[in-house]
Image (cartoon, helix red, strand yellow):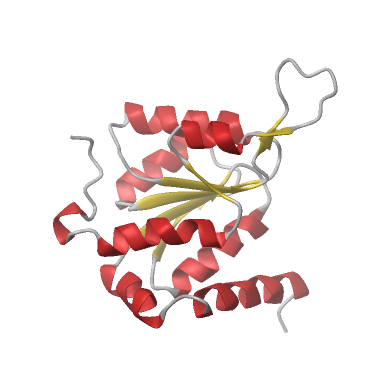
Length: 174
């Protein structure tokens, strides 16, 4: 018997993939997409929530690690030929981590999409309360894709699935 939390994640994955059009699901599977999935912290449930549904669609999961450094995450994505990176975060460092990932991608001369979801908040440096604030718009301004749910990943998957074959795995900047 799976743990209750694991069953809930599996049920969420099945519900999300089941809500997509069958032809879209097939296109994703045929495309052979690769996603490097990692977390900014120790909350592995978010990682599992992303990996399960993507794997059900036929996306190959590249383990980017739990509580992984941005440099390592980008290096693994580059080494394994990831088509995109998916990040789960929960501990109030979303903007700093997103900025570090964007800088690592630029240094590595990589141009691959990055989705980041979970608790998209951060404690401002000038905060006198220590309370985190939403940083979704700031993350979007960095060029990353903020995801409040798996539905926010769907447009990226559509774009990748429908891209001409010559563009697939083309991760070097022009």
